[in-house]
Image 1: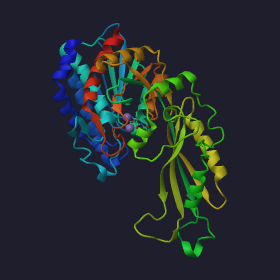
Image 2: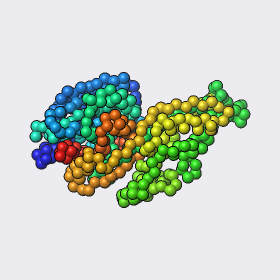
Image 3: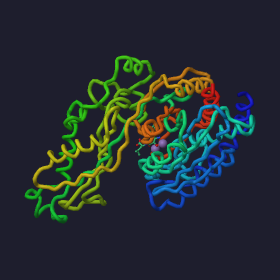
Image 4: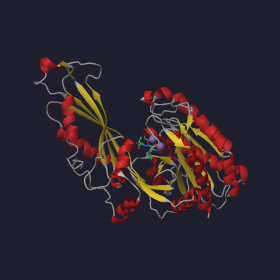
Length: 454
Ligand code: BES
Ligand code: MN
Ligand code: MN
C-alpha cells in the first residue's frame, strides 16, 4: 500500500489539473441546450477510464443521456466492486452570485470552485485515479472493478434504472461503491447509511379562462394564487406535521439507540442556523435537527409560477398558477403511494371556484444500509486508515435515487463513501470541493479495494 500512497502523493498536481478539465465541461443534464456538452463529458470520462487502464470501456447510448462502462476483471477468485457516480451537474443560476465563473475551475484556499466540483465530478474522479494508481504501480488490483457512470442523476436516473434491469449480469458485483454524499465534518472520516427518498409533485390551479382586471372582477371571482397559497398552508399543521391522511403510515420509527447515536455527534443548532443564514431553525415538534434532517419526512414548496412578476405593479387577477411541491421521504415510505395520497388530499382541499391539475414529476425511494454489511466494514477501515481518525456514521437528508435500485436489482450491498461536505454549496452558487478531501478520497478508494479483498 505504501507505494500506492506515495504514488498518489506524487501525482497530486496532475490530478487537480485533470479534474479542472473535467469541470470545464458544462454537463447540465436538465437543460436540452447542453446536450452536446453532456456527450462531450461522457467521452471525457471514457478516455479517462481507458487511460487509467480499464478494459472494455464504452459509452452506452440511452433514450436520455449516455452511460459510461469500464471494467478490470483480472483478480481471479476475488470479489467485484461496482463503482457508480454521475458526470451530470445542476444548472448554475443565479449566475450573478458566483464569485468566479462556474465552468472556469478556480482554486482558492485549497478548494476548487466550479459547478460539479463536489457533486459529483470530483468524487467520481477519485476512484478513476485510485484504479490508475494501482495499475501504474503494482500492475494489478486486489479486487475486480467495474465502473458505471451516468449523466442523469440530477434528473432522476431513469435511463440507468432501465439499463440496470436489462444488464444484471454485466453489472453483477459483490458491492456497489458510491462517493456522492458528504463527510460529517472537515477531516472526519464518515460513512452514510441512510438516504431520504423523494416525491416531486406539480399542482396547477386554474381560475378564470384569462387574466382579468383585478378591480373590475376582484372580490367576485376567486384568485388562483390566493387559493393555492391557502391550500399549501393547509398541508402542514402548527407542529410541523404533514396533514395528508395516512402520510406517516409507513414511516420507520427512530429507535432509542439511533437517537442516542445522533445525540453523540457534535452539533450546534446555533452554528447551523448561522451557516444557512437564518435567525432561527424550524421543524417538526419533538425532534432534534439531525432527526428532522435524516429520519423524518418533509413537505415543501420548491417554486411558484404565476401572476405578475415584473417590476412595478400590475393590477391583475391571474388566470392560473403552478406550484412545485416536493416531499422528502424516509424508509419505508413509497413515493408512488405518497403521490396518490397527496393527489387525493389536494383534491379535497380544492374549492369549487377553481380547477386543479396534479402531476407526479418524479420520485426516489429512500435507503437504509445495515452497518454490519461487509463492504461497509471494509470502507470504515479504509477511511480510518486514510484519515488517521475514527469513523463516524451518519444519515443524509438528500437522495441518490439509484441507490435502492442497485440494492434491489443487483442484490448487492451499497457503500456510501462520500468525501463532500454539505457546506460545499452543491446545487448553489460557488460550489467547491476541498482538495485535501479529494486527495484523501483517492487513498480511501485504494485502501477500500485492499480491505475488501481480504
Ligand atoms: N449528491 C446528491 C445527493 C446528496 C445531497 C448527498 C447532499 C449528500 C448531501 C445528489 O446529486 C442529488 O442532488 N440528488 C437529488 C436527487 C433528485 C434530483 C432526484 C436530491 O437529493 O435532490
Ligand atoms: Mn450527486
Ligand atoms: Mn446533486
